[in-house]
Amino acid sequence: MAKSSPPRARKKAPARAPKPSVDDEAAFLASYDASSFPRPSVAVDVVLLTVDEADLVTLLLPRGDHPFKGAFSLPGGFVGMGESLDDAARRVLAEKAGLSGVFLEQLYTFGSPRRDPRTRVISVAYYALVSRPRSAEVRPVSGPAPVWGRIDVPWESETGGPVLVKQPEDGSAMVLAFDHAHILGMAVKRIRGKLDYTPIGFQLLPERFTLLDLQTVHETILGRPVNKDSFRRRMLASGQLEATGEHQQGAGRPAELYRFVRRSAV
Amino acid sequence: MAKSSPPRARKKAPARAPKPSVDDEAAFLASYDASSFPRPSVAVDVVLLTVDEADLVTLLLPRGDHPFKGAFSLPGGFVGMGESLDDAARRVLAEKAGLSGVFLEQLYTFGSPRRDPRTRVISVAYYALVSRPRSAEVRPVSGPAPVWGRIDVPWESETGGPVLVKQPEDGSAMVLAFDHAHILGMAVKRIRGKLDYTPIGFQLLPERFTLLDLQTVHETILGRPVNKDSFRRRMLASGQLEATGEHQQGAGRPAELYRFVRRSAV
DNA sequence: ATAATAGTGTCTCTCAGACACTATACC
DNA sequence: GGTATAGTGTCTGAGAGACACTATTAT
Image 1 (cartoon, each protein chain N blue to C red):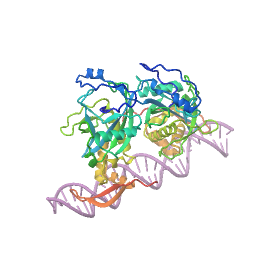
Image 2: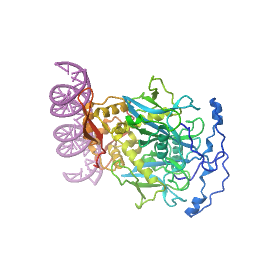
Image 3: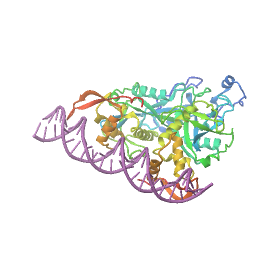
Image 4: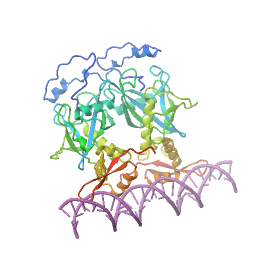
């Protein structure tokens, strides 16, 4: 960014001498002081998603304090001064869910001045995808016990907007804190859009899976049924699947187990 | 975000009394003090793009001060405390380019700890699209005269990565400050991906345009020729074009002038 | 045997690419 | 007239949807 006009300090900022005109870079850096104007807090919030049966579920934490006491919020935390945004998101996942090594990607940055009633907080949202077996390993290092909320998307296709979340057992509505229903909605919209042309669907499955497993993941994310025949053809033709030779017993004929292989350079 | 564990203050933070346990929201908000730990600066940087002849060009500002003195940077500025991120980006466009009412969308947030050698600056990048006639109106309110740099994309399709930028006249390389070559690269990658399924191409054209104009915009953004016949069919079938009945004189048969109309609700 | 699920073969429809052809301007 | 660009009509090949059919298990 070209920082030629930082906003004026508005309160209690120490008086600053005009910046000397220096032409030596080291001298300039030494004389620079960016602490003289107010700065917002910066946090990361992580939408951790997995597919459970035919439900898209996300990890939420009950809030024991104001604001939004009694509501649920996405796992999140402030960004450390020496830490990249990606590292902050990974740390949040490790601290609040006990998970590491999961797929993680930046989603969007939310910065309305009044999105947090306490103070100005800009939140860089991430989404993370974890496979069904690994989602059972979730153990927070500390803090409240997380809950897997069932996501109910009230819009079609990739329209967008906030989503509803329901308790895993009784299906009662879960109130979300801050703008977290919007963040979740944007996460759903994003993965719906990326599902067709990126291999994110495989992140939600164990190492070996059947084509029906993969189809269920796609249908759950998209919120609509997909054609079985063309789905099979498309997946097999994509070159991303490798048959293991093993089969999975089910109610009928055993299904081939496939493995995801990164497509070789075209 | 769940702000249960803000990072500890590392230097010169005033000593804080432990937070009292209050169960009244108003009392809680009054007692809350988020200023007790260090915070990064937050800026917005705007990639302003237009198509000039068969070149994708972006607005850059020459840097008169360290760091990166003599290099070029994207128009940018710090986010005000009472201002949303979108508003900050719009303000930057108004101040640095004299433009208002242009298409603007958030791109990505860049937050490596050392991306700015002076201090920790997290930059929320935006991209803006402006039509060729309007791009000639660019008049900065103050500050250095901007330059339209020609973007040279060294990668195919939507691979991604930094881009090269050249001076409009002599074609000599322009050195970009900070991580701005990466930000530009991500902007190109994003609009290449969105071109097919969103109407962003029309943002780069005047109100009335020929199908060849539209095709040139697409080819310039994609960096490759597109099939003329199927492009015409696709565009006319999309329902987004309305013939004006007027025609534009050229070297051969006059071309119909079309107008962009938002597709009616399906 | 019957039900249930896995997987194959084939037909049709749609759409992108290719190409031939017509239309209308300037020179 | 020749040349250049705009626009149409039609053929072909690839891929999605639909559906009939076969394969392999449990009961």
